[in-house]
Image 1 (cartoon, rainbow, N blue to C red):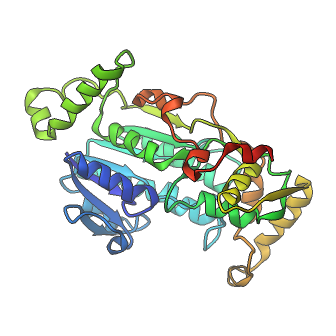
Image 2 (image 1 turned 180 degrees about the vertical axis):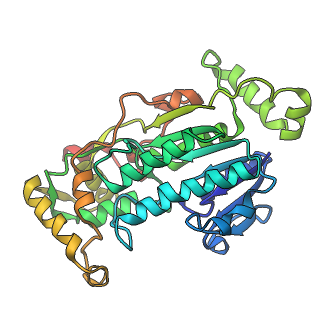
Length: 346
């Protein structure tokens, strides 16, 4: 299949492009600066900005599937203010859907976020929810992913935590009790690829039988699948919204302890009452961006980040089993950091 990855040179996008390419698909990475990514030579690169329709429209010509990964970080106040979330997530998704419909793309895989809600309390959550509405009301077949925070090489979650919570003695809003269910990018990417392909997973298949079927499936090119009729039938992922979390729930304080523990540094948490933390973070809304960027050790945060710390980023309905993953199959943050979990009890 010909698959367009919108945001194909980002943290998740670059890895997804490689995964799809290795599965035998014709992959195009669309990004604002596609030349900066380290991608295999067989992957096409196209320059475009989702907020400018004319710059991306042509990239959809001849594509079978599109995957929209473009997103701003919820962890920091975006340059230009919170309205940027709506420009990129809502308006950008509208442009992606419009271009996909214009060029007959059959399916869109949309990256959203846990808690996405058109009536959400933060610009990030609200804009992600509005983007979902655009996707679900489109003429396209669609699959939506709502992951918790994603970690891995090149990701921002661990560096962000280390910046927010310094080693040794660190104050955290509410004692850092906000909960996350982080998913490793190396686990998430194959799920995205399976959704793009429409690959089903038999929950009854295990062990050697499942391995043999997976090996056979990988040997079939998309063209062979089409001729053989393997692609006929319903795509199990069409019309599905998947909540995706990792195998463990950890607090912000625990993430900080693990992240700095991997560097051999201890962390002692000082709890800052949430109302007091709210005053401090909300006051940053009024600090000019140029000044905020020049202040060492001060993260680019504001009232939205304060509000996001007031609700957990977890799910009780983890849908990783839809892709053949049990919790024991997933990589924990502790395993990724290669650190003794007993550091949390020290």
